[in-house]
Length: 401
Image 1 (cartoon, one colour):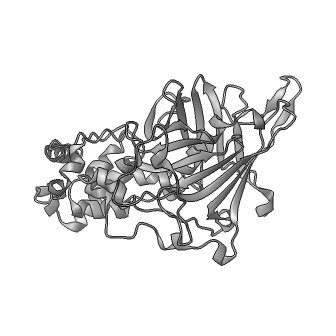
Image 2 (cartoon, helix red, strand yellow):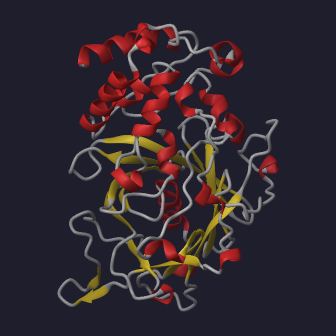
Image 3 (spheres, helix red, strand yellow):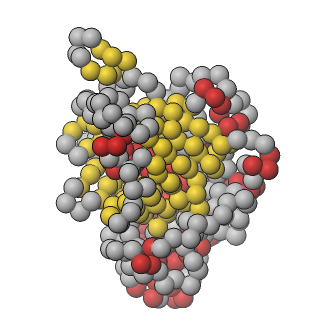
């Protein structure tokens, strides 16, 4: 089986070298600019005539099922990606076999960062901050060690404005502009740094409304010139309690998840789930056909207008810390995932107003070293939403501390 995978990689590599610098492994690598320019040529599935495409369907499904089941973690999970890139037949079967992180706890394709996390346990990630470039990289933890080894998931860059700050979130470290196609959303703050809004590049339900921005006039951002307008759909609001007295103490934050219904945390509840990257984002991945399908970009459940069904938006609040008399500080139980005391550390739980109080941690964020922070999240929020919420902790001002 392993020799077969190696053969697929060799044949797949012959196609990839025609203008795509692609290496499946620890991160989605840089894509050659020729991919977009020569997209009309690269649309042809170069593996369609391969011998691998002629395997009997029953045998093929059994082989791919075993490969997907055996490769549970990265970097070994790159074999699943290699199989999905062989040909259309292999790709369609692999897309049926690979389930969402909500069901499996596995992050496989780039769209996984926009899907809800696991229902059973926290997905462990970490964030590295670069102060000089004002960038923040999110990684999936591959070992039990804190922030030692990881697979790249998302990146964000901070842009300062006169009246607010923007964190632009992308799938690629070097391509932060919206027109590059790797843009997935942004976080915007108010002037005081007490209120934040999370915007997604694509809608999560039929009632979502696009917010008009002024990114084309923004300092440090490239002017948007794509044919299809980049969407900014509001998916969440974050607010920090204003501290007018200036006393030091734990922050108090509230997150209203506009795209997630309150019923999602109750038995049988579901969350709108994206299944495809938007078509404009696919322009940057046009030579990777397994990112595209004829299905809709959203599952049927994603078209729920939350307001129309009387289901309020889910509200998350930070878990109140306890004062430790011996340590003389505010403390939370992070179960070993946080090692450095910081005002940025927090844990989010479901607000008691949404029903019985839930002690289950939905998101926790904390410091483990200089410019290194852990981020653990679970259902019903996605890695993108969790990352955006954690970015707000980096930008808060003295007004809420």
